[in-house]
Structure formats: structure tokens, C-alpha cells
Amino acid sequence: MGGVRTAVMRSQLGRARGLGSAKSGAAHWWAGRVTALALVPLTLWFICAALRLLGASHDEVLAWIANPFVIVGLIALLLATFHHVQLGLQAVVDDYVPVEGVRLALLLSIKAVCFVFALAGIIAVLKMGL
Image (cartoon, rainbow, N blue to C red; front, side, top):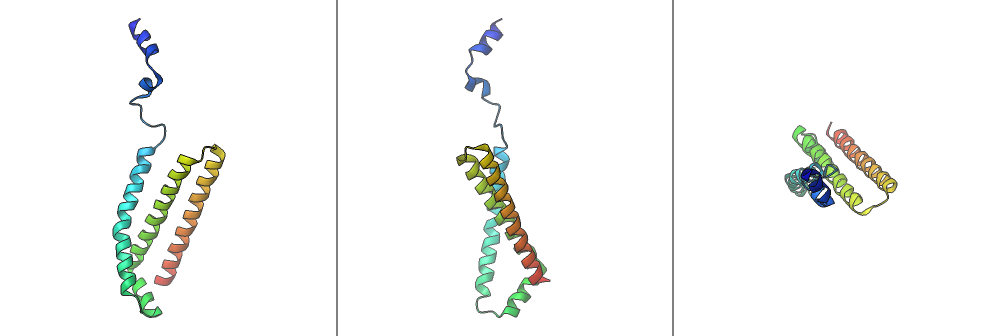
């Protein structure tokens, strides 16, 4: 009988403590950190390469892009960038848009726009590099 009375006397916070989030906040947080970590060397590599290519001819730039390692690096940069953008905007929408229907529409729009931009960038890299 004491166990039942104790359960009834506990507050809502006490009952919920230790149960974790109802959503996948930790996975979202980790994905944001991993993409940010990946973007550091990729962005530095791209900036250094762009600075070295200043004044280069169109053909020299295309020859640089044609290197398979460069193609992979550019595609990785595009994927990491747009995934990171999508994660960041999703966090903003989740935190500040209270209406469920509007939130869902915004999240789907953000995912679609990021997907289309990433795909367009990948197609451009492949078209220039191959």
C-alpha cells in the first residue's frame, strides 16, 4: 500500500525524470556536431584551393575539378554543408514555430530546398569534372 501512495504523491517532474526526451534530440545534436566537424577541414581545403586558383584560366579550373579526389571533396563539402544547414534550420523551426501544421510545412520545405540545392551542386561538379 505504501508503494501506491508514494507513486501518487510524486510530482509530474519526478515521474518523468530519467525517461529522456520524447524526440530524438541527442541524435540531432550529434549529427549537427559531426557535420560541423566535417565542414572544418573541407571548408579550409576549399578556401585554400580557391585562393590557389585565383587568376587561373577556365581550362585550368576544369582540369583541377577533373581530379577524382577533388570531385569527392567537393561532393562531400556540398553534402555536409546542406545537411548542416537543414539540421540548423530544423532546430530553429522546432524551437520557435508553435503551430504543428506550419512547422511540418516548413520542415518539409527546408528538406526539399536543401535536397534540391545539394543535388544541383553535385550535378554541376560532376558535369564539370567528368
